[in-house]
Length: 364
Image 1 (cartoon, rainbow, N blue to C red):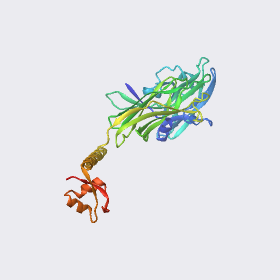
Image 2 (image 1 turned 30 degrees about the vertical axis):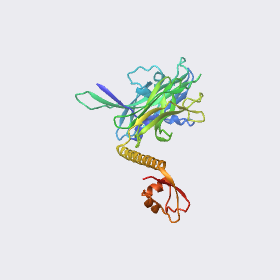
Image 3 (image 1 turned 180 degrees about the vertical axis):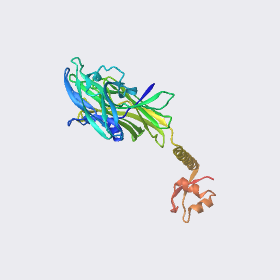
Image 4 (image 1 turned 135 degrees about the vertical axis):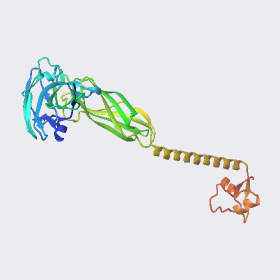
């Protein structure tokens, strides 16, 4: 039998009319505690708290409650271990008072639990999860033996005081056109510290003039001692051309707080950008090709015109304007084009000539 686990944040599950859980008593000094359990505990400390288990469906539910360790998912994202995985860290420290909760439709219950930190706990941050799982399973295929198991989880972050280290660097950034013709911006961050860092990550796409044309990003936890990879997709620029993809990140660098709100201790870092050539959209290509061809024709015409004027200028002779002369009468007298006379002498309409004026007269 294959068990497929569908993950969602507790808040999302509750808002959508599902099952979920959240901290029953969030801390007033830390807004993060509204969605995750945040503790600063010394080795040997113990703390009691409650998780609020919610059933926002229209049917009665029997929900399983259990604690597990955290683990690094594909790409370095935060995830929770399976129930069958033996807990070795925070999952072992947590003791939930109830393993099952029976909830009527659209109801909730606060379930107590205790965290006992072992005396051997290491300095830094350790993570685990309290999982809320629907005990009912719905078979999808009679022959395939596939079942769906719905569960949500609440992160539990425990920081052991001591020498807290925070270090975050970009390790790689790429940009390429994906199969869906979107521009995929990928960047990787390495956390070599001993606490997780809630990080604002973004990749900025800018043109050769340094003007931003698109930005993608979001807020993500980067676990201690791990490398996380983030993939963003944006529409590729209409006009195409060469662009720079530059990764940026912001995190709290204050060693005295691991999961506190962002403050003046925020540190901004920037990774090495990469360049990418993007083909223009079909309409943009037509417009650009038309403008390019038109520009070439115009420039070529100006070059030929100037070359002709230069040749006429080199083959011209001086002439002094007499009383009664006009541009047309001179041209007729010497059998040359009046326009060539006008071009060589850079005359402007109405082409008035003064007696005694010296002009150049091009040869025929």
